Length: 331
Image (cartoon, rainbow, N blue to C red; front, side, top):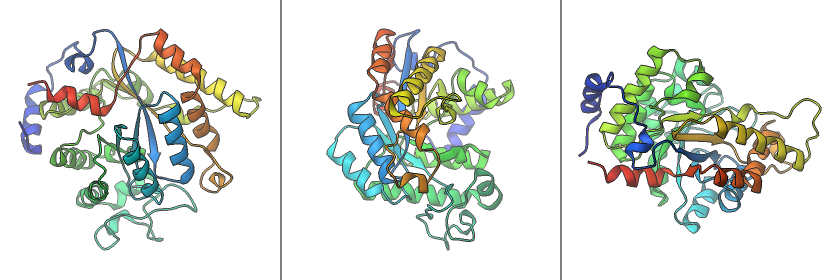
């Protein structure tokens, strides 16, 4: 059954307080008490280096999901890869910000259609706060729709939608348009609406805020979409301990240890773990100073020690494609 956004909002009002200990993973038919994880890579299409890291992490490592930044210059190469490697779990990293100093991108809609989404250079704003200050919800919807349409126009059907820098979660109005577009195209939207243990600790969310987010999760479930129980979004801040060498072997060992510790902290249910796998060339430092941490993500995903840990602990890896298929079998 298809629901309009207004219908789902109405449903959410009546069920927001209906609490249950059953995780969304269990509702999808996955084993009770198990950790079910999506190892998800952001920022595909951003650069050549980003694409190379994504490709290696997906084909040689344990990462199993990715999302593409459609306004960015290396999208065609990533789309070609996705068509060649059939079945990869690939969504859209809906993009409303352009955060680097000398490497920028512009809205697909064009400035006349979304003037509130561009700065004085014609590029997207550098920060979430600037988008909130200047852009309307109508402009946001227009741009993320254009990004979905570009993907579909290339023959790339996204398995899910998520949000670059979390911009679409910055205001209730933006969040509504994010959900609306997902519903219109019948594409799952990334939203942690379950116990939210990890993301609540990271964001410092109080109980009232958690109840609101869980209410949105219930709306999405009622509309026929899968919902996350939790989200891990801390890996971008993992640096090397002071005094550590920055050679590849050291970076890999340290970053793998971080991921193992993070997986130990994951609670039973369905958790998406976000990373930014990149294979930095000599050009990448001119884009960003985040090359070491991004390279560390790639090296960790390719580390046999991480794969061995996941297997030993019985952690189940899943994808958005599988989740939507499971959700479609539930009345």
